[in-house]
Image 1 (tube, rainbow, N blue to C red):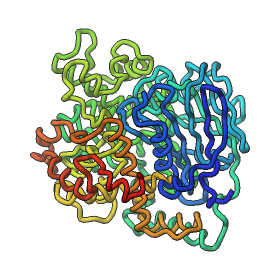
Image 2: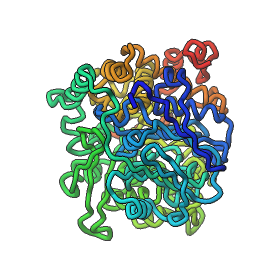
Image 3: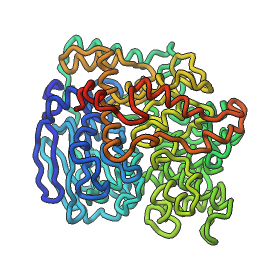
Length: 605
């Protein structure tokens, strides 16, 4: 298959009937929405914005991008797109590893699941064939045991397993799907949707095939240019330059802490002080690191396999102590023991949960316990690592207090009559950047189409100086246009589907050159930004139809009314209203609603 034929092998699986058929995606969909995230959103829109996220009518899509499985650097990702049970918005989550490439090598561009199986099933894919098979033997098992089961059945060579754990089966609203033990479709509750459909796993067996892109001189040249950009050791923004390759994503812990943007104790504080060092990437690299595995076609190797050396979890070996969960289970919960953080992350990988959301649920319950809002016997103290480990299992099983937290921090806070202590937007919890110290990130949270998210825009790259810029993180002016630009660029890269970290070195021009050669068509940097804008507006259109209108782009009052407590940002709050006015003007939106004229101009209607 030539890459110019992308979209011609989308598998539609009716879980209710067991029927599988292969169809080409509508050509205009591929031209407008590219693949990955964008094409997935278009398929989910077709199912309907008003469906019950946990009902059989909801659609669960797994979409490759046009570059997936090729030799393009950092092209080992695919998108899972659905209507989120946590937020009610459209959501997409992306996963690294090897599953995406192997799906392409097996002959498919995407999978669209509809309906609901009567009993647990898994999809088995190999050599252009797909079948649904009985998953009764692994239903109830964790991800690690499930992966081991399929490796024993099908062998370890060229096999990828994407599975849910007990959390997905029990429809924990932030349940994840996990690939090969540790790479997750983490946010938005896609695992709960899979669980509601009785879809335990997707098992793919496919050896590496010849590049999907014709091996032309032009392709070799644009691929070399992109790789050189990523490997440019003289370029401080290169993802190979120190940071990501040496310390992984957790290189940001000390940086964010120093500028007063590291939320602590459920964001009551904005710094973890000297204790941040003990949960940082630098500390992990010096004390716990044992291996640097990587994903398909990735020269960066940001995954950091670690082993706990002593204490109650001695011998635990897992990947990785990433920045976001290290924050959510660390400073956010007043916990400076990295071993306990690693333990809970590993539990999340095995039970299939988003550790960002889980850590926020814990911190909500800790603050509520401190203030006397929790029933006697249900309290959770700040930094109680043993209780956090035990409660993680209870959340996955929906037992006791775990049943309350399983619905996410927003609903947990509402259940005790204090919704204001949930640091969430549209029902999804914030990640590891405090909006009082990074103003653009706050606007990005508020306007994200999938609820609070750092990856929709990731303006932290500019505000923290990861990419060349003169952006002041404490200045609110100009952030509206900046956030829009980053959102549109990443909407396109998520649709290719390339790793987000490629954007530390590459931009619209590099993406356009690779896409143009691969697809055999004219494509420029401005086309990248237009396609990204179209995809972002498509998502917002879905959300508008799902009931999100004026006033939905908000931040918790803690960020807009309670000044920062730490040096670097002390005294600052988020000027959200001013930034929103800029942003809506740049988007040409009516206070968060996409006007019909804008939809028509972008070719959405």
